[in-house]
Image (cartoon, rainbow, N blue to C red; front, side):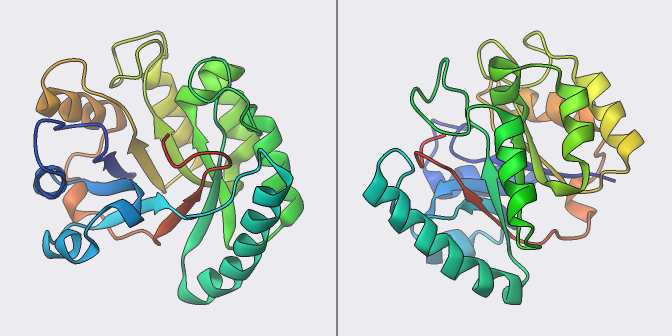
Length: 232
């Protein structure tokens, strides 16, 4: 059974952040956040939610030489610590056509190639199908190529970046492909709600067949290495 998570940065936007987290957790999902330095960590712990991923870097950028050196130094140091702690770092593909102009690793294949080349157990790919659909498409073949190097799959429909069923991606086929691959990791909804937030979460859960996600075994914590920006 898949583990399902929901990004608290993108749903229940009319609520204070900690309340968003509670709503997601009470609905039976794990919680994802972006830049953890912008939040009250003690307050988030107090919600009782289980956090599946967060942005893992707080400084540096691959868009300039100095920033790249800082980011890579920090990543190298962090990977050793993360592997000992059972935390997985994930490198995410980002589209440059719409959301992240100028960002490196605009193609998921390039991100995958880097993760494969590094060959560290603590580094996997955050395969974002929303970004991949905009950047290159052919999502099922991409999933199969990434396979064991996937740390998490993130989803949102195209166009609009809302929940499954609001755009052009065949998420039923995506779910079937993940099942055929034997994927048992996390699928994260990193999407806005097209209307009612609870309905968006229900649609997400229905597509990926979670049923009772709150009863699923916990995943290893994941820190997302976003190449250029903490705003995803």
